[in-house]
Amino acid sequence: MWKKLFNKTQKSIKENKAIVINEMAINYIHIQKTKKNISLKIDQQGLIISTPFHTPQSYIEVIIKKKLSWILEHLKKINTDSQLITSIPVLGKNFKVIYQCSNNTIDFKNEIIQLVNKENHKKIITMLLKESAQKYFNERLEFYQTKINEHPNHITLSNAKTKWGSCSSSKNIKLSWRLIHAKPEIIDYVLCHELAHLKHMNHSILFWKEVESIFPEYKTFKKELKDHSLSYFILD
Ligand SMILES: [Zn+2]
Image (cartoon, rainbow, N blue to C red; front, side, top):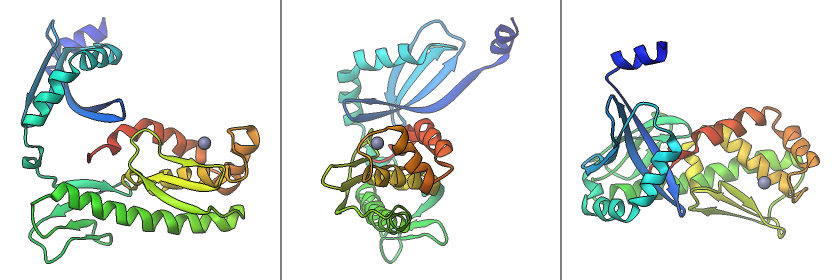
């Protein structure tokens, strides 16, 4: 009853969400309001889905999947580059993106991404983040390698949106560059997880003991990664 009364006085709730379909992330704005039907529209903000309050997430996902070709076709028509990025998470902090700078660079100290101009800005930001990711992951891996006393053969970056890391039997570690959006502890968890696979190629009790031995607070950040992963799909 209280819930009902609460909803009557509540006008609407607006949230940014994302769904992954075939390795592709579809970002959308979910608006919940007092209405009876569900509606989809696409404008300069992207895909907007309005639903009654308490519509199950699974039902919204079914609708997106059903209307997928319509959605993709209309999203393509919108020039996404006209939506200028003004801030972006890097290592869990909101970095400002500023334009008309003398070169393209990331200033970690002041939490700023500096770009020369707006042209291809998403591509340039992606490139800068990939460079930073490679450097940062290597540094952190070196730190944990000494603790675990194992060394990967190669470390490469992937573009994956659902698989943050992997470790092959030939001791090659692959990491999604998108992890650079996450806070340092989450990145450390993924790195320690993959390093522990150098000793145990499974998720056995021994494996998790190994993770815990080099990163004791891993459980908290394992959960956080699961809860926040959809917010790491900012760039295509
Ligand atoms: Zn694993």
